[in-house]
Image (cartoon, rainbow, N blue to C red; front, side, top):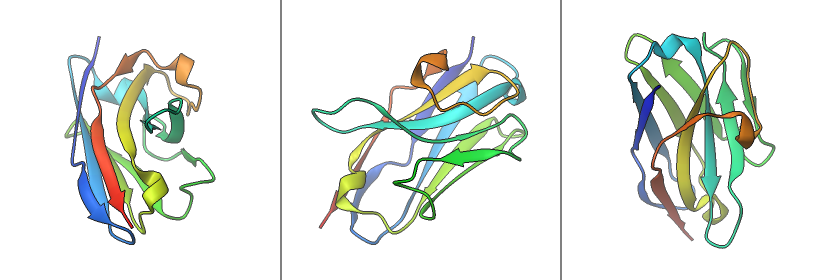
Length: 124
């Protein structure tokens, strides 16, 4: 199995930027499709974006399209989430997730491995 550890969260003002990282260990990282999800207090966990094993295919939720960018560096076993023009409604606990696959996946239930999450708080 693969272990995932997120980092890079914090407190930022609206309009600011953050870059989240998710470091993987345990298995061949390049065999895994990766995704970012988030969960705000009192809400269900929701899809943010996803990337295929090679980094050539990505998919974004409408709420973050044009502001967030997912990428990966297979040599470093890391997936990134660059978040720009952050809004207060982006405040949530952000999770990375992995699935042994060559595809791009948006459904939470398809992911087998999850990190513990990193908190992002955007002040207005």
